[in-house]
Amino acid sequence: MLALLLLFAVIGVVFLFITFHPVFGSTPSKETKTKFRSLKHYSNGTFVNQIPTEMTTDFRSMLSVLKEFLKGSPKRQPKHPIQVQPLQFSLQNTSQNTKITWLGHSAFLIEMDGKRILLDPMFGKAPSPVPWFGNKRYSKELPFSVEDLPEIDLVVFSHDHYDHLDYGTIKKLTNRVKKFIVPLGVGSHLERWGVELDKIQECNWWDHADADGLSLVCTPARHFSGRSLTNRNSTLWCSWVLNGKDTKIYFSGDSGYGPHFKEIGEKYGPFDVTLMECGQYHEKWAAIHMIPEETVQAHVDVKGKVMIPIHWGAFTLSVHDWTDPIERVIKAANKQNVMICTPQIGERFTIEDDVYPRLMWWET
Image (cartoon, rainbow, N blue to C red; front, side):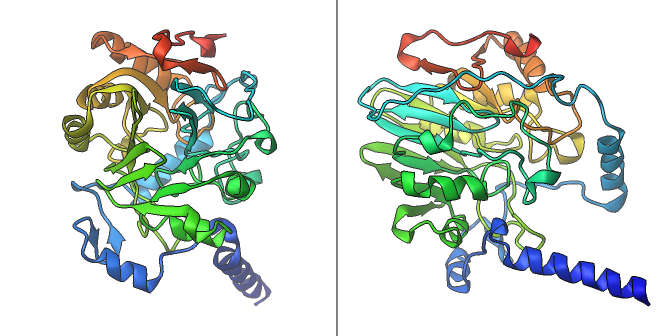
C-alpha cells in the first residue's frame, strides 16, 4: 500500500511540474488553433510535413536505442572541453559587410546590413527541461557572456525543441531584443516567458517577414515539434531564407532530407552560404534528421556556394561519435566539389572577404 501511495505521489509531482513549470512553454490558444485549420499542413489538431514522415517509436525499437545510449562510448564527446574563441562586441554595428559567427550547435550570430541577428540562440548548459540531467555543453562556456551582448535587432527560431529554444536564454535576452520572428505557434512559448506580444511575429511556410530592410522567408523543413508529453506538433517547424542587400543565406533548422530543398533552391537560390544540419542522426529517426551525405545533397539542391555544417560540436543527442558528422560531411563534400567552411565556436569571419575558415580544429 505504501509503495502504491509513493508511486501516485511521484506521478502527481511530475504532472504538476510539467503543468506549471514555465520551461515547458505553452500551447496555442483555441482561437489560434481554429485559424490553423485552413492550412494544408495542419490536420487533426497538429502540424504535418509536406511528405509522409514517420519515426520508429514502437517499444521494441526505442528499447534498442536506449540500450545503445546506455552502452556508452568514450568517443561520443570530446576527451577535453572544446576551446572557444572569445567574441568581442562593439556598441554599434555600423558595418554593411556580412559577418557570420558560429556559437555552437545550430546557434549563430549574423551581422548583416548593419543588423545583428541571432539564429536559434540556445545558450544554456544542456538541452533539457532539467539541465542538471542533460548532456552538458562540450565547450563548458560560451564565447561571450550573455549579459555582455549588445542590442540584438532580430532573433529567429526554427522550432521549439530544447536544443534550439531555451527558456533560460530567452529570459536573459528579452530586454536586449527588438523583435522575435518564429514559426506559427512558437510565439505562445515566448509570451508565457514574458516577451511582449508586439515584439513577436509568427510566420507560416512561405511567409515573408521584413525587418528594417532585411527580408526573411519562412520556408519548409521536415521535422516535428513539442516541449512536453501533451503538445507534440502543436507548433510549426521551418527553415529560413535571409536576404540582405548583397548577401543571401539559407538556414536549414532541423530537417530530414526531402523535396523541399529543391523547391527552396528554385524559388530563392542561389545562396552565398548555407547553414546545414549534419549531426544527431540515427537510422530510427532518419526522416527528421539528415545524415551527412544528405546534408551535402541538400546544399546542392538549394544551390549553395559555401556550406557551414551545423547541429554538431556542442551536445551529444545521438549515439554516433561526436566527430562523425563533420568527418562524413567533409568526405561527401569533397566527392561533390562542395566548399565546406568549418569555423571554431566564436570565430567571426566576413563573407565579402571570400576567405572561409577550414581548420580541422576538432582533431587537436
